[in-house]
Length: 280
Image (cartoon, rainbow, N blue to C red; front, side, top):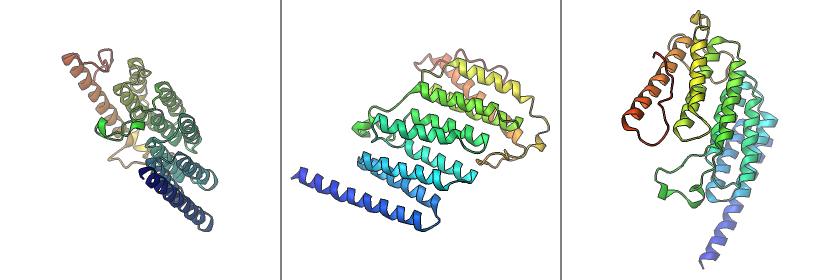
């Protein structure tokens, strides 16, 4: 009896998802609302993922990529769309390794081809999280069986960060350059604290030294508006160079606190004693 009910539910739910696919596709082809349709396909893909329909979820995400490739051309819209795709993919759990790798590799590739260098950098370092899944539930016992073993590839995540660093280094504006370095440093710290063994203290020390070296290039801060060559604008109080310095200092203070706690407690976990923070 239970098997019959499950079979009926599966057939009805599959039919509902097919109807949803048809409605969104019709909307996309009949109306000029490509961005809305992309978001609808992502929502449908996430719903199919939660219901355990891998093939249907995969098709929804493929449709979202198709809309991105065919109809999203403006730089800000591209950046916003690809970050939404990355966020949606990061929450999925139903895919096989092959299907998931195909989708996240495509997302990372599109991120690296965004029109503006800062957008490329941010898109690529956000893509790193696709290779480092995190728990969606607060309590381990609440996790479904397929989430007990999370997909994590520390080396691929590190590769994304290193690629983002190269893109940031190619930015000509000195303020944008250092701003991106600080953002990437925070990603390195995240993976270091989460136990990604590929991200070691040497990467943190190297990037801290690089940022300190480049801080002196941020002269005449008033002449640098808030990252004009980026689609991911954030409003800051005062010159962006001041914000970047504050952000960097706050990051170093966080590391200093972690280092002091680690030395006091000698608790298991990331080792901060080799961090070279200089004078904060």
